[in-house]
Image 1: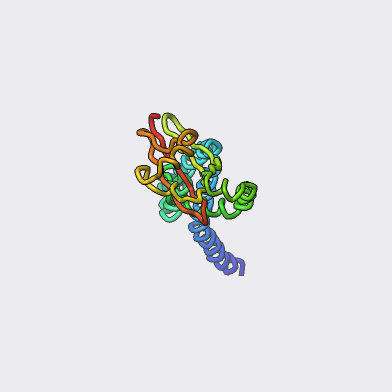
Image 2: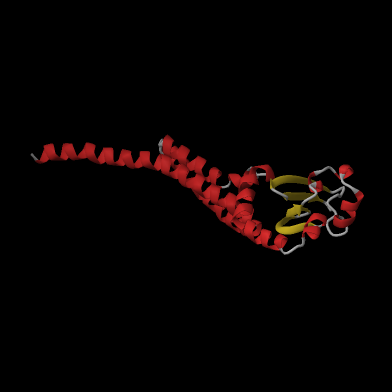
Length: 208
């Protein structure tokens, strides 16, 4: 009887171990994807803090890769694949940087969640002021080495902020350019319409 019970418990233990391995195969990449999404959001909100988190992610990537190599030498190929792929998913936000077009959903969320505070500023202006002024709200700056990116939410009832420089009126330029140049040989400026008279303006500068 003892021998039969022992033989029966062995498959159960094997099945339990197999189920744990199978669960790990999807849990590990899923956790990595969640961490990658967190890094993307953090990079959007605070680039400097994201760099420190990135260094930690690199350490995790190295440890995970070493564990994956150990699993590979032990012929646990599925576990090795999960361990080798997961760390690169975590740091993908920096290995393959997301550019402003892909940030548009985050920009829109930020705008609609905070729109009230910008409307409050605009509502304090008289109709004449709203029609003549171009109001810039600072949305932050990202800089590393000799490159920098500047972000603004802009209220412009004329809509000229969305036009090419040569199509903007001289009166508009006289109001805006003394404080916000927007045209520079070292910078590339792009504009996206959000809602109503609100626009997102991004200026990327290199070697300025």
